[in-house]
Image (cartoon, rainbow, N blue to C red; front, side, top):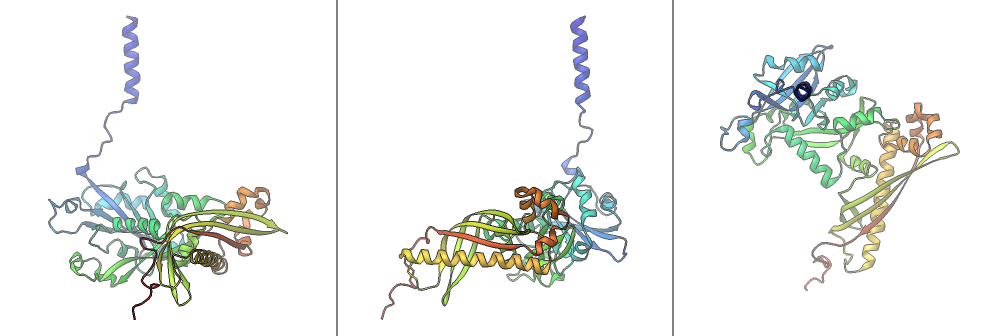
Length: 399
């Protein structure tokens, strides 16, 4: 009798935690949302939300019928929660947002502030927080996610892969997913940045998948630097080159640098970079030193300097180090004078390294940032120069 009672008790305990499959969602009953676009609507109080829904059958070569790989649908409303639950006014199946890769934000909305929109996405259990937040520069946000491309066919997936490739090869794209944006927004001594995209060509022709049969696409999405924020409001842009200089301060690992050397140029493929930020107060004025160690290979050499001479390497290392130092300081100066907000996180480093002193200026740190004296020290190490040491440019020409 005792054993039976114990068995029933254990069974009842299991029943409390085994809830069954009441919340199951069958894949063939869902529509996968891969991208979202926020725009200001004609109604001043409302905004427009465009979603990009995957047409899954077109992604399978055996089932594809040459139809559009995605479907977009737009609604106007007052809140994100309202719109995301009303999308089935035009979309057949229940929406699944766990595969969303991009949130494209219109310039107008970005300048007014995006916190009220992303707070719903951040706390919602239906969204992953690793989708990229991007500002549409000079074009409508909905035009970005309706501009088609041959490979991959889904605009949001193309954008996501494109940005990740830029980050991994050229190093000019900052991490701008929802997690990072919320961190930068809530962290003392740092302001957020996100990527910016534009459309080269005729944006109105990007919707037609038949245009993808042409060699020269009529519209193509291009990375166009980063958008600078003060709190949750965008205040301007940095160019792609300035974005890469910004990334030197954020521990970029791989990139390529082209440096003048007399009448020509040489290019360096950087495969390792180590950044440290040292801070101090000098007579009450904050000072920052960016220390950077760069390792790379000579990727291209248009100059007549022979690469089988060690002195050429030493000379190029000095030129490269000075070039990067100048770029870092110039970009910091641009941000200080043009925007006056600390996107580099220098205040965050002051808070960690000089907590008591930083607390005095925490509430007006951006004002202190404008007065910040920044120096850069770069150590460049060039290891090799490709498959061939002697270039035909430096070889003796035949008479």
